[in-house]
Image 1 (cartoon, rainbow, N blue to C red):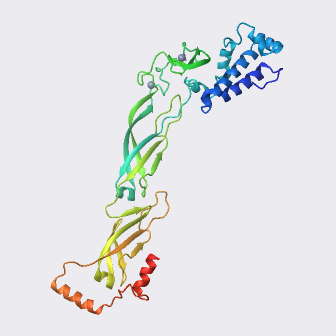
Image 2: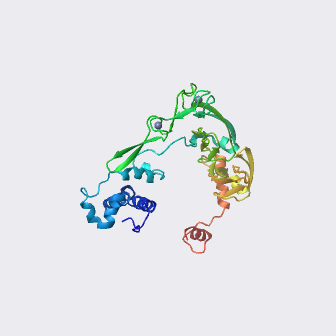
Length: 367
Ligand SMILES: [Zn+2]
Ligand SMILES: [Zn+2]
């Protein structure tokens, strides 16, 4: 069952049992729990026999049947339970399997990371902003410097658990380890607590943090502020602060990464004759020249006038999408001019006739 030679030493048996027990532990075999349970029992039975000198001798002499004649077969009392803890006590996570807490004796723990959600206007995100944020967090106690003990005193070993941080109970088949309630697993207790932090070593304080948001950030941008999370326990390092940004949309510009898009209306006269327009830009008005004969839907780009890259790369571009506004509510004079214009303007608009330019365009669009 354990795969050891007849001549195996106690250490070899122990090692084989440890391996087999971990393999067949029911919690590690959720697929075939029953088979695992049976195997686990068999391994433990084998180990209890082999680790007991007297039983081993009987087994070696008479085989498995021999044990049935010795006081009702194999019992699970005795050394096996002590050994269980010795074998597995140091195995990472084993206590978790058995429902106990892990050994937390004075282990340095990194402080928690913190998340702070911040909303920016489009303009703030575009230009960057320096701001201050206030947040409550666990800071190291300045009086005891995190030990939790009154100034001039220290911690002493916990008497309830002998400084081990946990207590072992025997429950049926298993030894169950639990976090010591007297010291909460620390293995040490403080006789005289620091009055400032009441022995916690850390204090909740509201801290003001200066934050520099680079230009060009977008919704979802995460700014890491190292060392501004919570203080660690038992001398562990401080966590980090993550500021997660949400940028409000602009009423005029649509953002796509670092590029900006917008639509500008032009009159039919401007579109036909060409014009120099003054249009809204990110920082003040932009001059945009549209050529004579500009069609509706035409797009003009001003390179490098989009948003900056917060990582220091180049700038995006600014795109103007032209919408030609068909005049409505013409007055008498305008109407007359339009009629005169209409007579002189020739537009090929017979799509049904093959060879016409309109037909070719339709064909281009719809394939
Ligand atoms: Zn303190
Ligand atoms: Zn204790």
